[in-house]
Length: 137
Image (cartoon, rainbow, N blue to C red; front, side):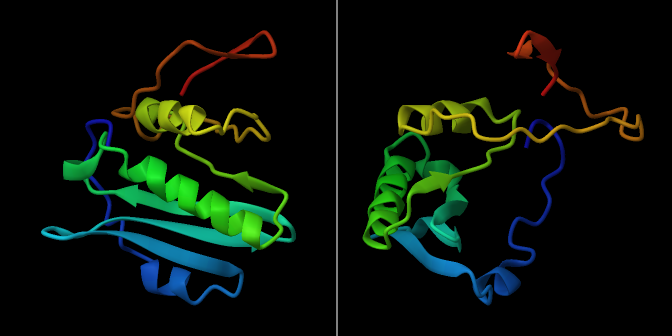
């Protein structure tokens, strides 16, 4: 992602499936291509956390993610959850745009990082403003 070698995104998945707070995991299944996406829901009291949400590269921008988000929201409502949160990487502008379009428009928390200069090949984009302060992403 972002021009860097990709880590194994499947690492830790078996451990994820054994989490006690896991409320559900749903997949998008394609007749020819098999599983093309998945979404998980964990619970923190009456707050739901959407994690992970993944759509295969070949099926992105085709509404799969939107359908998965709609499904997980309906499941959260059935469980009487009050809100759903999701934490996309700040540099993943496509994901943030998609989530915003799906109704995730409340900024509920901010995670800040101190760059210690140990990864000079990693570049951060300028231009994110919050409360009259400039940040990089």
